[in-house]
Image 1 (cartoon, rainbow, N blue to C red):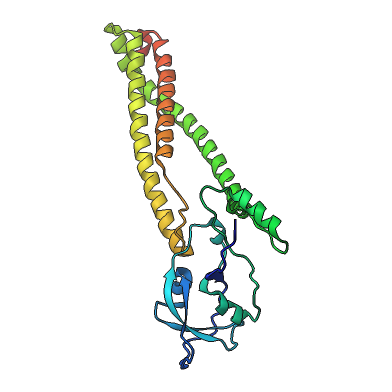
Image 2: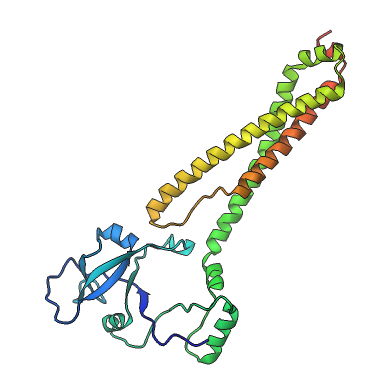
Length: 280
């Protein structure tokens, strides 16, 4: 794959040297684009003029902001208090005082080509730099989030086990409170199988209603979490999600727990004599 002859824009660090500079530009006015976090923090908007310099407080170039870019949903950028500015490459080189040098840049490959093959071809073409596929960079920079993900999974498993035990205990207690009714039904000739089906059906309906309510509460909670932290970090990254797959898994698991707990509770009733259930 051949490298593009010229990289028009480059992401670079910005040193905001000061407020507006009312200097008459002889050369064509230079323009830049800033990200929304910088715009919100510094109170800048499109059309404002700022001074860019290699060091804070040093003389620089007066440039005009022509665009405000939206930040990408990159987890590795959340914890960094960095700002991004896009400017022309020759402008960056003149500010940095070094030409033909860049720290890093991105190359977009065609969909038909393999990123690993492209990076291997670039690394074999020359020395002095190193190319990495975007997926590899994402894995290296997301180690912290993988640890957090495992921690959340462990919490989820513990919560499910504790909820199952709690649901079983509550079902046993509630069914035991109705032992007189069940005993009366047995004395009227209702079969044990019918009693078991009635208890299982009732516990399944309770589990279904509870899972629907839980899914609604989870959706509202995730919306509040995203609304708060997206505003704090000025990022479109979603910190909590409720997908259809998660809802389906939660409903299925709740129904299974409801059926199992109802069956155990019903078995305790039908194994006792009807007269014992009514207190005789």
